[in-house]
Length: 370
Ligand SMILES: NC(=O)C1=CN([C@@H]2O[C@H](COP(=O)(O)OP(=O)(O)OC[C@H]3O[C@@H](n4cnc5c(N)ncnc54)[C@H](O)[C@@H]3O)[C@@H](O)[C@H]2O)C=CC1
Ligand SMILES: O=C(O)C1=N[C@H](C(=O)O)C[C@H](O)C1
Image (cartoon, rainbow, N blue to C red; front, side, top):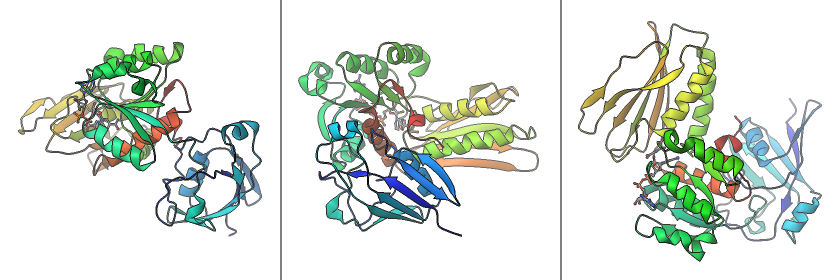
């Protein structure tokens, strides 16, 4: 069968961008890159033409197993010319081999920066486990950290340095996140936040601030690509299982002993998605809680219409989420197991890159349409 061919129009900047390595992997073609403009993609397959227009499309097509990409000349729309003086068009061939896009006829020196608008000024709110990891990844990606605010220097919200940030990345606590958003909004700074546990109290007001008062917040209970994929599998599986009532469903999340909230924000997102797709559950409820010393509180008992979510706190586990469908005959379990916090941190930085050029209440659905 003839290879799929994508004719893609792309521009290449002349500025330097750290790419690293001799090939460009999926990360570079990641949909989160803040490409602000459309570049046309024409997919030719067995005589069928499909119009695509964003980096997301490249990513999706790559994952679908496309064999060959052709990057052709790009006719710059006015907006791109205004934004990028000196941009020039070039033609490159990309091949997809085992989920990796390798660049052919593109030397490292040429640096593909089509995915960068510019290096950003980032402020960090919360300099704990996530704040440190985000700092490292942001620097690796060529961004500048202009301000770091933690519990002891909150007056820095009023500083010039903080106000100069393109985006603030906030990872603090369930109790403090909302006030941090207000401080950042008052300083005119957009926020990316992964803090969990604040939505029951402040969710409505934050939605209003973004939808009616022009503030920008990108929030996700989990920024990792793996959980975004897992979420899509969860929704699809729930859709299938809605036709098989012999299976009851429950969830379980395992996290490190320092975690303040239970169930985890990710578990709540997964539970809400699942309930939306399956007819026989209409709310999630807290099930058992296993404390670090092994003590179990709560209960496994719940009504048929309730989705039970069990929480376990153990050691330094970065985060494990499972959805379990159980019947008399067998059990189907899907699990996402984070090996470390890198995926969360990279996702948060990618979200910040996206947020720098977008407005309003933003979520992972803006980045991935699985
Ligand atoms: N959405 C996601 O992908 C992820 C979300 N999280 C969430 O992010 C939050 C933070 O996680 P970690 O960094 O692991 O916690 P951590 O406890 O290591 O760090 C939190 C930091 O926030 C600081 N802090 C507390 N109150 C503050 C305030 N009012 N202003 C400024 N800083 C303040 C603390 O001093 C600490 O340095 C938690 O809610 C966690 O559930 C964690 C990992 C991934
Ligand atoms: O507190 C954590 O560590 C994590 N919190 C998030 C959550 O509540 O889901 C995301 C991840 O699981 C790690």
